[in-house]
Image (cartoon, rainbow, N blue to C red):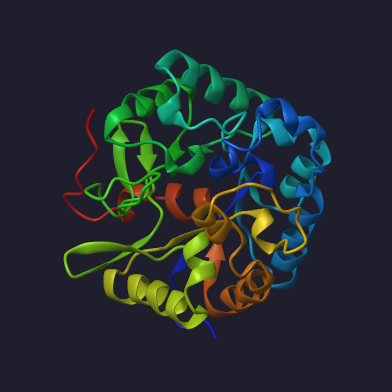
Length: 293
């Protein structure tokens, strides 16, 4: 039941449950190596789901994951999907100096390219952590050779967000496109419409309606995202987390896979690079403002 001809971009942030930013106060990085890793089986389930719908997607992959599970990189690439960068160690861009950020994104790009044999064009900052306070990150991304970023979520949120940023694809540097995660505009405010915890919180019908609204009213391709751990209701529970974090992370995990199956049947989906980089200038709205540093 695909109600329009627009191809939207489906994106997966390839990280494991213990690497989520909200768990950082509870799980030191030196414990990552001893945690039971579940990303392999979850990515495999996602790849099988995509194959079943003959859909392609973009996998924003951590260098830390790729280094330890190189066959996942090969499975993604061999399946015709886009491999993109999520940085190396899931450090928020806003927590790094400019030099440390550049080192992270450069090393992740080189690692993923060496492993895949393909150009890594795209980058997504962990936790959408590029905002007004660190717009120098776009200079680093351009210098490192990335062609697009999907690192801004133009909403208000307690952990991230840049609500006044443009809602759709726009040039932030001469050679760099920023493709924000999708929002819907109502009552002079941007509302989340594109995955993650909101997809698990809202009824599926609401998520579908919001995406349809963006396609039909704004006439724009949407960018949807989720994580492999969001289809994994059997993941280990992290002890001691506060109530808000626990609610956000574990809510409706058992429903996510079925909702994604419906999503794949209700819309046309493709890779970020094919949706936005092919004739991207022709796709941009006229007079789209750029984010300036």
